[in-house]
Length: 44
Image (cartoon, rainbow, N blue to C red; front, top):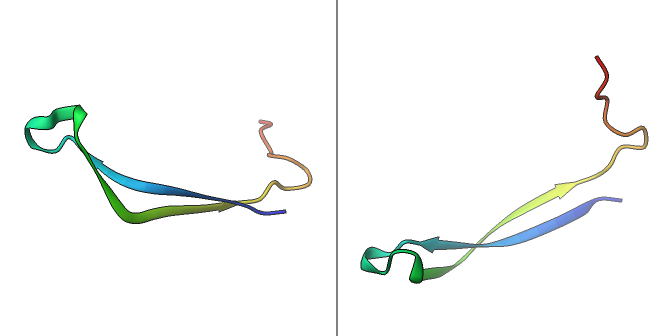
């Protein structure tokens, strides 16, 4: 079963506000992933 994660974007470090000011944007990232039945192949 696929899983989708949606994360909102932001912009930080605006001018003299440094880390105390940010800007919320109407933009987002979407990542979809699905686990495989056999799991990952991590052997040599």
